[in-house]
Image (cartoon, rainbow, N blue to C red):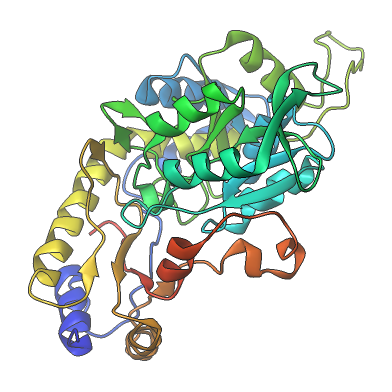
Length: 387
């Protein structure tokens, strides 16, 4: 068993905080945040129109290698919009993970669709290509979708069509997204990547969120960089990018004075005020990623002599180490570790409750979730803020 006190002592020494509370992942403000916020306020353009929104989008697109980036009010809104762009229809089924943050399943519900929970791989904590293939082979038949006209898998039990897949890169560790994409292509399923946690993460040299038709990012207060609350859609499809920008700004037709709307739109556009913060944060992103990787290396060295396993970077992957994580021996050790560390004012948290265990999703279709259940009983997130 890991010596819990040795761990809390190591964390305090690492952060040079001898006695005060150590949070899980506080925001890091050490650049032009105040300057740009003041500039934004002085301009009076604080809502969804302003130069910082466009600049923030351009910086994210350039960093990720995507051709287009469209800012949204938060990561969940970005994911909801991505599902609309993917043409998800009411009663469709969307493949996702039971091991994810609730926003993923919520966004699927906003689209009037049903999540289908697929198991994850233990090492990546992301959707398992083997589990995905097994579910599709055993539970679906190919038929023509009555609305879209596409030949797609139909769930033999529910009678609903499976049209979209939303895998999630857990804690910034890339999943085997190339294999997931190949499976989606084979089954004519649209791939939407939930890359909310993985800004700065790469798989086979390519940024997460750029493998599928659309990817989404989050800039919540606890993310690698933050706009307070914010999100982003990234895509290489110009038509989808234009439609995303139009729909997220209430589908207003451009005009100097008239208010004309040509579609049911959404007030999902990021504010210029939030984007000003985002621009300042993007200027520091490479520094932040460097410091987070140094922290992860320190943790990896510490846990190399302990029984508790540190979740490390996988082959072909470059993780951003958004939230560092350890794997306890069992549920008992997990709970003891959580209690001890939090009692010592060193913040730790368990991985999320599995989606299929939540009241609103308990009847959703699912595959075998053995790996998800194993991880849920063992994973703990440890302090991961920039040193």
